[in-house]
Image 1 (cartoon, rainbow, N blue to C red):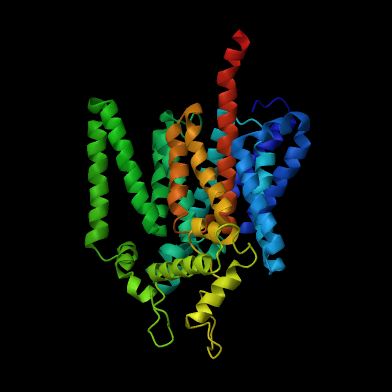
Image 2 (tube, rainbow, N blue to C red):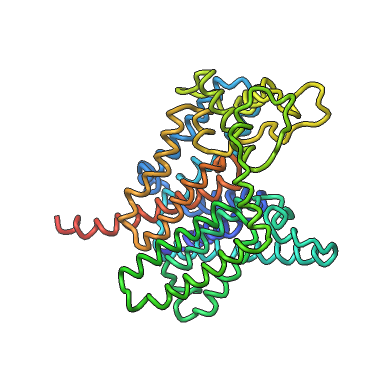
Length: 436
């Protein structure tokens, strides 16, 4: 985007504001979306804008929303359906607001800088708050996992990790021309180190594992490209990583305890037909396995393959199945309500399939896979590979597009990618057109 007028500058600043507040509590994100709407209206030029909306990268998002909207008509719980549609409005709003303008590399970098700045602000606030609590109580658990970010009343530790891992790899894969340049290495890597410490404190098992895997892939790539230049750096990196892993493995710490929970997953426990006389263990792994089992049974028993149950009824039919299984907290004589009541499926693929059937699942898969066919048009490909591949894996354990913590973040950067990609593609095709 060339900043030809003050209107364009207002729009870019609105984009940066939204990127900055993504990790903040929900009202900040919602307000920033409406600021972006206002900036888009002020910018004008609507005739040219809507010509860009016919691209596949945008249409698949709009189609995904339309399927949810159609499910309103066969959902029995209309109130829940409308609420769900309200949270998903950005599936349509962002393609219109961001997809209809061109984003050049300079604007993209400003967006990334703002996103990193917002995460640093949140990390500083959370760590400072945890330190204050620790001084009063002496409880070090405040520095780890959900306790670290509970004060925000927004994204939990898992979603915050989802943001931070992308920010960390921006430092590694994106070539900054301002703020985090080669000339400012001490500042750049200090910020990286601060966010990395925050990332470890958040203690998300999957994303810590992915971070190490991505780091290994990038190290091998650089080593193959120029062994003499990178061998010392990679050996040093490997030593640091192995030292870190050894510390986690051989000491007692909250992060190690999070990984040990995985070994306690019990498929036999999850397969029970009646939980009324069983010890009900609500740990992180077993809960997911049980929720997935219930979702799959609902899809099969109710034949939800082609249209789903509707976005308004999914919680109701999940709760009904828990009642049938006599899960504690769902029985009439229970004095408490189970934390499984109206819980998300914690798998976006299953969530889409149960709500809107195979067409919805196909839309989601297109949203996740299509970018890999267009990454060839952009530089710094590693940045977008990591963003997209992390989302694909993360959605296997979280219903990312069901809550604002995931919706605004993923939809925003997905559409930013498409806008940048189409802008780069147009620039490459212009010389060819000129010679015809």
